Image (spheres, rainbow, N blue to C red):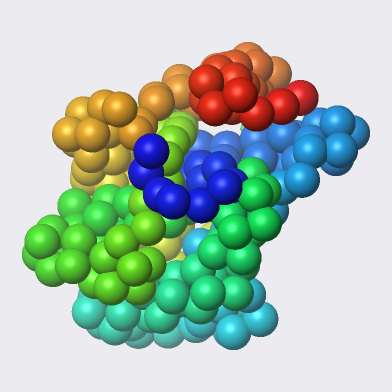
Length: 215
Ligand SMILES: Nc1ncnc2c1ncn2[C@@H]1O[C@H](COP(=O)(O)OP(=O)(O)OP(=O)(O)O)[C@@H](O)[C@H]1O
Ligand SMILES: [Mg+2]
């Protein structure tokens, strides 16, 4: 058990364009239909304050130093935890977070070479050490993921070169290997419905093990 709350805490991780947001929207429709109480949030931008931080972080053309970037993500996370994640878990809901602490390790640590122990320390500070009990890694080749992102509307992270995105992907694979009981890896290069089936199966098995109802 990763935390003391009655709810269930799941995070979705993986490179830009892997399909996390697309898949969680499909899942949300099923949860609605099955009347399962859930909270869907995202990191960054899950709160009104966080939306402003997200805008600063992802707006292209804004120079943001790596340490500034790291701290802004942590500020967003602390707010999201207090305002959305903890209340959801305390109310016994299924809380799904589109990115969370592991994104800082993958992007600012493996991608931008900031010190991993320092990021772990800041992650623990901004979340009070609250980790997801299950983290789904949407794994995909960097070229394929980049190809999926639509023309024109690229944000500051997506504008990074291929070698940055490869380092991020490798970072995620390393993180998943280091903590195999928390992570499940999904081949996100497959068709939408295949990825959705796999995601539902993994979450369904986790909920069943906790004797909780799922779709
Ligand atoms: N399995 C899939 N097959 C083909 N295209 C897909 C698949 N999953 C998602 N896409 C498309 O890829 C694009 C990126 O998907 P999405 O925004 O869900 O990725 P993401 O992981 O949330 O990325 P980011 O981390 O940048 O938010 C979208 O245009 C989406 O329609
Ligand atoms: Mg997304």
